[in-house]
Amino acid sequence: MNKILIFAGAKESKLLIKKIIDYYLNLGEFHIIYENEETIIKEKKENLFFYKIDFLAYDLYKNFLFKDFNKIIIFIKHKQKAKFVLEKVKFVKSPVLFVNFWYDFKEIPQKNNIEILDIPEIITNKIIDFLPGVPLFARDIGLGIGEIMEVEVPIFSPFVYKSPSYIEDRYHVKVAAIYRQNELKEITKNTIILPNDKILLIGKPQILKELYNQIRKNVGSFPQPYGQNIYLLLDMKNMEKKEISALLKNALFLHRKLKHKKLIISIINPTLNIKLYKLYKFPNIDINTDYYITNYKEKLIKDNNELNLGLIITNNYFFEKYPKTFYEIKKPIFKKGEKSLKKCENLTVILHEKSIKKIASTIFDLSYQLKIKLRFLNADPENSNTEIVEYLKHLAKLFNFNNVEFTATKENPILKLSKEKNICLIEAFEKPPISKIKQIFFPKIEYSYILLKKFNQFLIPIIKEENES
Image (tube, rainbow, N blue to C red):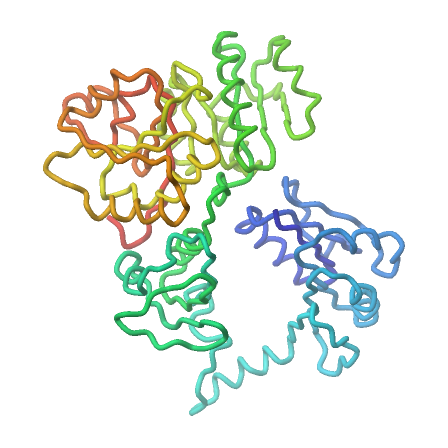
């Protein structure tokens, strides 16, 4: 997990902290050293840590500098204090970003780990761009709202060995350039994207944000990019002890298997439960009891807004009671079935072209981390689903998956699957759930999970883009 240290010594750092809170808390932990309250926005968030220390009091923060930070940012507007901190950090191994506010600041060390954000230079370049007849350079062009993005394609990305047209056709994003080994490559109809290529993309900011997560997706990272923590909400007044025990067993299994930060167990309407309170001794399990909020829906919404949740564990009763809420929070849901996930025979995905491709990397990620066989079931006799099957086989090969099965059936998939003992369904959670009666009389394959609720289920959200109906 990324760890960033920020010296917040400018009023503008308030805006930086606000943007981190609003958009980037999932990136990792942010440790903020400050002198004055006027330079920060101090909100209680899980991944934000504040330390009030004078910048000249080196002995009080020197131990921070030698921790394993992915980036140290010096954002100090007092010239002498900025110089002092820069002198102290120039010997650390962590990458350093120094914000230079002064035209005549000459004391910048020539170190490979120090990057300079030169404010006078940036402002001057922006003014030059407005002069008539001057060409724009690729430093600050466009709307400046995130419509131009460069991303490096990792080795295990599902976009490796794809053509630029693959991205353009499916995401309505323009691949403007490909950089390979520090050279600009000509894009032709035969061009393919290779591991470690840097690609320059132009498109709508929200689409680019989602595409970035998909390109950078590496197997073994779930519940990222949705969030960092696994979450279980227990209403002890309205849950039987047997149900609480079953939910806890599944939560602890996922806690052991998935790559996450913490298992958070929130309790409302508390009663005595010996098994639950034995978990207090584990450092990466947080148990929070709320004596004020008694409503499950209210508590779920509050915790989703504050705790950086990546996977929410629930059961059929509460999912069916608050279906709209579970849909609107846009987080992956694990819905407990009748049997233990630990003894699950396979992860089953019913194929349909429309949505499965959008969550394909998450499907493989879950199979990889849980070490459970993956099965794709084609239940449409009139559609071979050739495109999605080939895409999934490509991902299986790319991720070196051997325990993957592709099957087909002419039988009603719900009837076929209902005969099985203990499987776990994975489905795209793209639309609000419909009623059981409506699914019986007007069945749709993407709602199969509604009639198969006896099985454990993962429901993976998809955020619609503006150009989707």
